[in-house]
Length: 326
Image 1 (tube, rainbow, N blue to C red):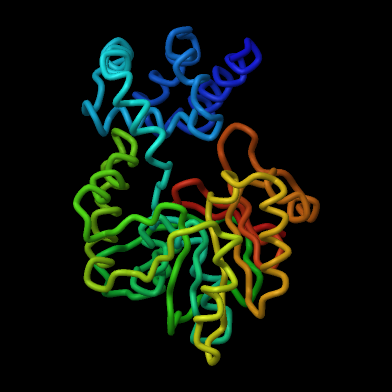
Image 2: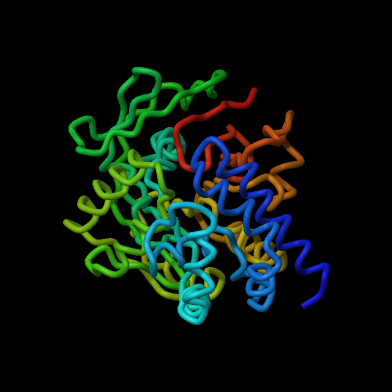
């Protein structure tokens, strides 16, 4: 451990408080600001591998073990009184937020492709984003998708989409599958509990959305492969039916992949006969970021929605809005 590592971890938690939790979860904003100023908790975190120091992981692991904290003192006591269990949970688990609301940004792109489509999600978690055809959408009062679905995703739009995306038609899915280092099973009660714990406090609507998506997936569980995305992408892509348009997609996943592995993934996707939809932070794909005509807001986490490397829109972290790019 070095002072530099501790400073970097503290900054990571301050950044989370300012750009993610602020305005979305007052409790998590309070907790992460507290961690950033707490030498004992920073010591605990910097003893972990860098990938395991994530704010979401510490917050979820502690909440999973001891329930939702009433404030920072309660949270701090929960971590330190259960130090070994918290560390063990953080080492064993992954941040696997499976937010079906992100499908609202994906749906217009999928609807614009030759149907049917074969969906291959990288970093699929429990696979809830593999069901965009099973959800209903409301784009500023315009309905799309499975209009009778129990899960309706409202999405505010800004700007003018390309003409072929303006009025999304139906999406027909011939095949769906995913890859994850640790796939979660919607039929497993403990996996479902972890998914629910990853939804932040105060976000009751997100939790209802998650529960509805889980119920839909339980009726037809997805095919998920365990493994590294680069090691298993070609194998899984080969299973897609030849008559369908293969779509490889991912959301908020490649940020967890080292630069060289991310570059290998892009190269591998480029050699597949597929369409590629990415929804990630601009800093993780310099080639896509270089094509942006303007930069996303700096005060919040914003994804760039891109198709085949071409940026089309900015989108929200947990769904809810799209800003179409000129």
